[in-house]
Amino acid sequence: MTVLVTGASGNVGRHIVEELVQAGHNVRAMTRNPAKASFPEGVEVVYGDLASPESLAPALRGVTSMHLITFNSEGFGPLHTGPEIVELAQKAGVERVTVLWSGVNGPVEQAVEASSLEWTFLQPPPEFMSNTLVWAESIRSEGVVKEPFADSLDAMIHPADIGSVAATALTNTGHAGKIYTLTGPEVLTIPEKIRTISAAIGKDIRFVELTEDQARERMRNKGAQEDVIDFVIGWHANPPKSAYTVVPTVEQVTGRPARTFAQWVSEHVQYFKNP
Image 1 (tube, one colour):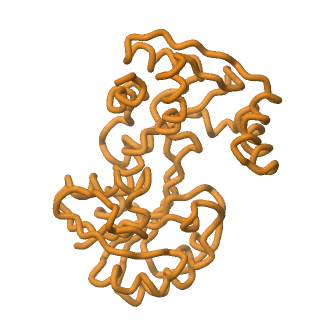
Image 2 (cartoon, rainbow, N blue to C red):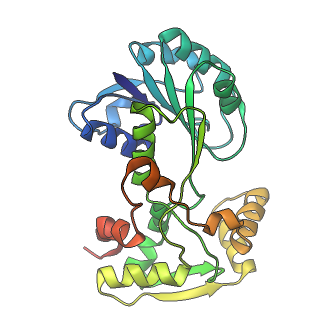
């Protein structure tokens, strides 16, 4: 069995690769820049761009399972090449596919569902534990985190848990036609996350709660468009119940409990400490 992981150098993709390698599977990691990619020993690295389906034929040779992402190569907006990708996969003999799903039924999702492939959709929460790396610089330089909506709740997930579920679904039966909603094992507020990081680095971190106007202005200064600002602010101001409802899917699929935020912080503590 050879498993193709698209978006292999991404936040989730690299964890899928690692999980598959640890389980002893043959892994082919697809990236748009193989020369800069770094993967575990034994991983076959190949070029491919989902936005250019013609580039996928070599990557698909001999593949029985594949992981798909649904956004374009710049990370903005949905891929519109779903039908071409799926057709190539079926011609190559791919049998099973996992899809990292945002909940939007776009061109990739529609093509996968209409195909003969054994598909599994993975729907994680919008917040990954790794998103807190945006605080690293201000924690190191000022010992402070500035964010709006202190009481906003979320059940953020460790990207490695998405990787574990994907690797399981790609290499085992019983997952076809399933939509797996994924979360971490706990619901946290921003101050609770900050206290976890503080304990790990042995340093008090101040929290400054921004007003909504201040948060909007900060996003504008970073070049965000108004529609993006409205969406992000609106989501954090009033997150959907699904964003802070813990579900046991990770453990049910993999047999292992979902990783805690404290565990993620312990693995990345060096980013929050001064050299």
